[in-house]
Length: 406
Image (cartoon, rainbow, N blue to C red):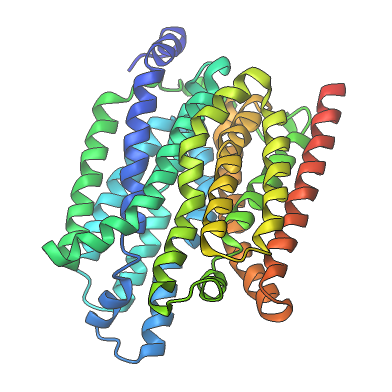
C-alpha cells in the first residue's frame, strides 16, 4: 500500500473502482442480512420451537438482534476506520459476516441462531463502512452522486433479499441458503482485499486521529441536524410497518390478496428510493445538499396527508412510491453534509453515529406507528408522521440558514 501524498493520489485515482466494489459488496451483504425474513419462522421451528407464540417471539428476537448490535457498535467501527483505515474495516466486516452466515446454516438450536445473528451485527457493518470509504475518497463535487449510487445498492439489497430468501430454500434448503449466502459474502471479502485501494494511515496520522473528538468540529449544529434527520427518515419509512396489513385489508375486497398487496405497498417506497437516490444526489451536487434535504422532507410531508384518506390500494401504492422518490436523496445528502462539516480524521466516527441514529429510527418508527394506530386509528399514523417530517423540514431550513450565515 502507498502512504502519504502518493497514497492519497492513489485513492483519488481509484475512487470510482472503489465505489463499484463497495456497491456490489453492500448489496450482497444486505441481501444476506435480510434474506432470512420469509423462512425465519420455519427455521426457528426446525430448531425445536413448537409453540406458535414462541416461534413468533424468537423470530422477532433473532431478526432484531443483528440491527440492535449493529446500532451499538457502528460508532466504534467508524472510529477504528478513522484510525486504521476504512478498507481494513471492510475486510473485517466481510470476513466476519461470511463466517457468521455460514455458521447459521449449522445452528443446532435457537439460542445459537440468535447468538450468530448478534455476531453478524457486531462483526458486520460493510454497508456503513462502504459509506465512510466512499464519502472520504470521492471528490466533493461528485459526492452526492457517488453516495446516491451506493445508497441505491443498499436499498436494492433490502428489497431483493426477502425475494431471494423466498426462492432459494425450496431449491437448496434453509441450511444450504445460509451456506450460499456465506459463500457470496466471502467473494465480497476477496474483492475487497484485492480490488479496493486506500492509503494506509501512517503511525503519526493514527496518533493525531486518536486525539480528534467533538471539540475539533467548529460548528456541531449541522452534524446534530443530520443525526435527527436520519432518525426521522427511518421513522417515516418504518412507521406504517405494524399497521400496513390491517390498513390494506380495509382497501382490498378479496382477503386472499391482502398480504400480497401489503408487500407491494411496503416495497413501493423502497423501489422509488432506489430509482431516485443517484439522481437526487447528483442534483444535490449542483443545487446544494441542504436544499435537497429540506425539499425532500417537505414533499414527503405533503404526500403523507392523502395516504391517510385513500380509498383504493393502488392509490396507497402510488403515494408510497412517490414518497420513496422524494426520500431517496436524503441518505446520500445526510452523509455528504456530515462529511463536509467534520475533519478527515473524524468522518468515520460521525458517520457511525449517523448509522446508529438511523437504526434508532427503525426501532422508534414501528413503535410509534403501532401505538398511534392502535389508540387513535390508522390515519393518525400518516398524519402524525406528516407532522414529524414537516417539523424536520423547518428544522433543516433553519439549520441551513444559520450555517450559511456563519
